[in-house]
Length: 85
Image 1 (cartoon, rainbow, N blue to C red):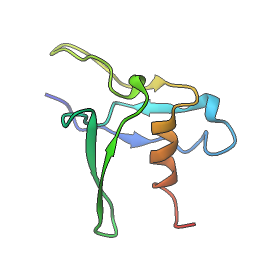
Image 2 (cartoon, rainbow, N blue to C red; image 1 turned 90 degrees about the vertical axis):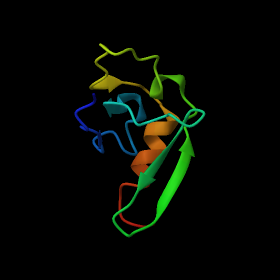
Image 3 (tube, rainbow, N blue to C red; image 1 turned 180 degrees about the vertical axis):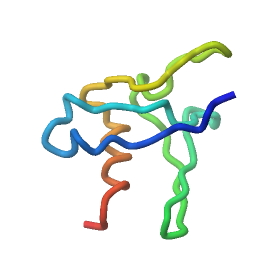
């Protein structure tokens, strides 16, 4: 069972994409995609493109605080975790 700890690290955005971090991994149960709900009430389904975003996990896997330089999925999450552009 996962502890539900997931966050988007904004320290690398946008000038240091080589420092992209994932704190835990987002769900990818639906053909490598996951659904996200946002505070404004909308939701989106996103297919994860970088294989580091959806590693092969087992029942005993721990996937927290993964450094994933230049990960397009982390950058996608970061763009949606800030104020509207």
